[in-house]
Length: 88
Image (cartoon, rainbow, N blue to C red; front, side):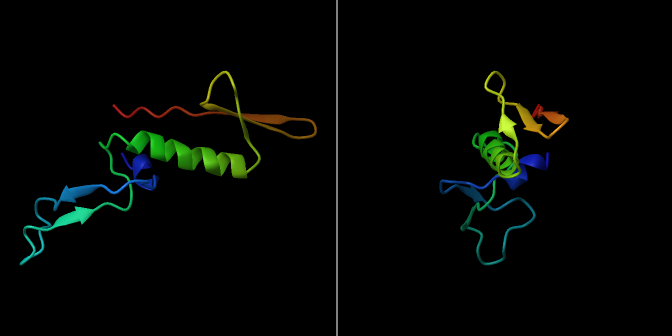
């Protein structure tokens, strides 16, 4: 459940104050999200974009056949990383 908290939002999204955390005197105000939340439609995509950027920045190439597979070659060896996130 915490993986999606690391995605950065590209659009403005607002939500009601969470139950139990309503600020006294500000009951009618809403919260603007700066980070993604589990359950948002944008959450999986934003998290993947951040992960892909990190992997590319560290010398990994994304496989053309499967975008969840990353490859990094060395002189005599290589790393194959397979990523699968189940958000059920």
